[in-house]
Length: 257
Image 1 (cartoon, rainbow, N blue to C red):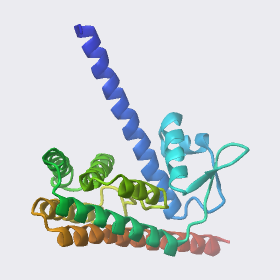
Image 2: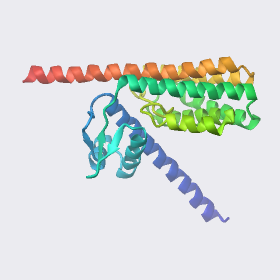
Image 3: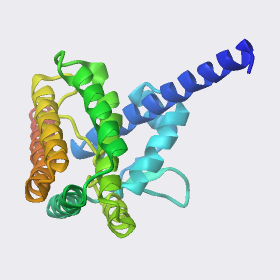
Image 4: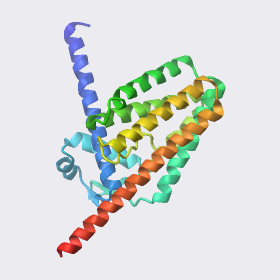
């Protein structure tokens, strides 16, 4: 391979990473608009409309909407575009609990069977990357990177369990609304509250990995389930905040009428 080929390969990798980051940013913003009630159930969502609203190009918006369709947050319309689906808070919370239960089982199996050394090493590398994101303090630009590395850590825990059957069940559960580890809903990007939540999640990651390494199956399972409950609590706060914003908007419209 000559220098031109190397440069082209590096440039392609940078472009690919930038596109993935743009898509993830669009996902996070769209998810926040849905959970905050700014995009209401049944409301039509078009790519062009979201390009203007989110300030990103059409390609990442299209990819983000496809991801949200897989999460059952929007549905494709025969006439084109998407519509926001009706969300049931109890069902969302059950979906998160299902994911936590299954991932807890994966963590316990990984600990009891003995996780392969290469997967343990890979998990440590991922957690070191997350440390670089969350330890310096709240940063608006760190959330997309956190989501990517967080998803990788969860995938590694499933891989450590060594069960294709369990991996398939976890994959099925991940398409439930907000059940995927990547379905993060920040209270406010870059806020102290969001940062504290990420620090807590990272602490739980460390405990899970330590328990797996020490072959402590019950501890690994319990912490993984607690980790899902943290996501559950964060979502409840986001839902409450979204309702309050909606109530304030209604009150403002009433006072101005």
